[in-house]
Picture 1 (tube, rainbow, N blue to C red):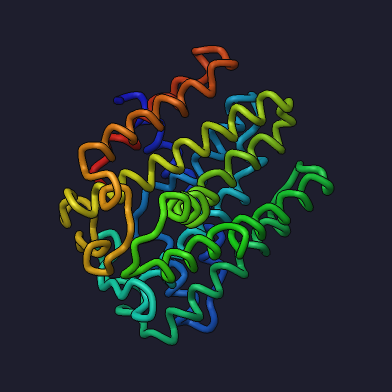
Picture 2: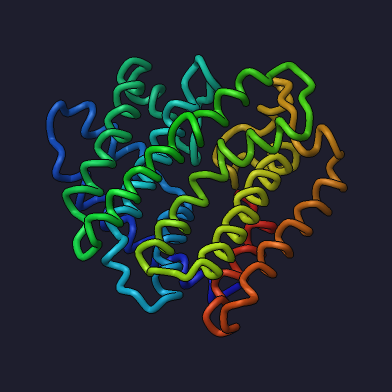
Length: 295
């Protein structure tokens, strides 16, 4: 895992410097500009933007081609967390060990900060992306909109809210996970494949990998909500139980959920067998890391 940790650290620093570059251009209204920086630059693994860069490197493409889009995806992810934490949704006081945006800036301001991050992300994609053909860029913008909206993250979040204090089917739980979490993990992988002009076989392999690690990420989150540590996670544990949410542990139990997690990760890794071993080392290590992460 040492290679992976060094790789993630280097790429995270690159992504963060680019996020700062784009957000530091914003000045007024001060509370929105400051709140946007606070919400995005308060830590985080940067998994989603790094995945896009990984795919570009897999095909020996320059990562500059995808950096603005990677930054935009992280802004969208951060907006979703700002709104998730609001009293009307999860009502969380801490995120990544720091006060949530609405606790820091106010509830109304946090709604607008989240809105600003979402809308500004499209400006970053269109204004800053260089070297990507216009037809591909239009396709990418459409995909970002779909995966972040009703046919993706928002759809998953809505069904998640509707499912609180109810016993829902495994099919419904899968829909929640595939959309609420999975679509925004799948998004950068597919965008990287589009920019890299992957073949149909390569695209499908990467899509299957992304589906696998996206599901694994959410199952691990379900487990951490029971077994996690506030100091490592940066937010209170037990919120799923408090809201009576259906999760993998609530359906299968904690030990069976861990077995399913291992199976999902193994399947994700197998999906990349069409690529040379030396090209996918970081993908394989990342899949394993998702299963053992502590935050």
